[in-house]
Amino acid sequence: MGFFYRSRKDASRRTRTLEQVTQLGRWPNFCFYGAHSMQPADSQLTLLVRRVVEPLGYELVGVEYFQKGGGATLRVYIDHEHGITLDDCTTVSHQLSGVLDVEDPIPEQYDLEVSSPGLDRPLVFPEHFERFVGRRVRMRLSEKVEGRRKLEGVLRGLHAGVVTLYAEERDWEIPLTSLDSARLIPEL
Image (cartoon, rainbow, N blue to C red; front, side, top):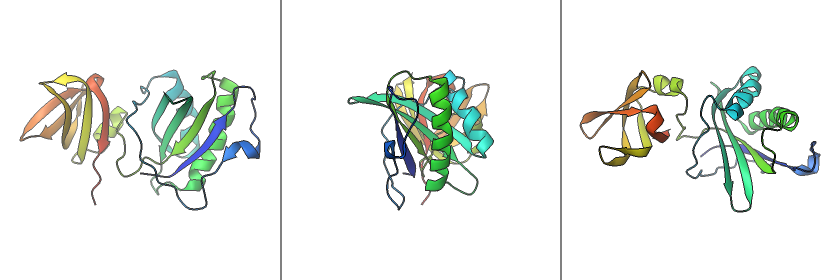
């Protein structure tokens, strides 16, 4: 769950008018995200987004690009040590929209969503796996490891591109390249 701000990129126009930007209400909107894979840390799209987000004082948590139904969505997750508000999402969306219009890394029309990572924060970059050692996580694997595709347990760390997870009374060693997704399990 988390805040998000959404705007549309119209492939036929390179600028946005106020009518094209949809702010989703006065109060925070909470949404449940589907299972989409994050862009790799070294993808051209992620590097472009990082160049905009980090100088604004935010942490880039992840970037998703997916097509569903008749449209496409570019979803950007941001965080800050003091949390994320709708105003933060709006600020990043406006700055990012301008850069995306100039750089044009996605030629077709898409919706841009800027969101907080939510309580079940995705773990995408290697530093995320180091930062959240000791926390409970849920992992979905892109390929089976010892007959399993889903694991839930305590994150022990990351070493040489291999995540160690304590689950089912033993340590599992999962290569980062075998992870489809990893998310924190909220502590309520």
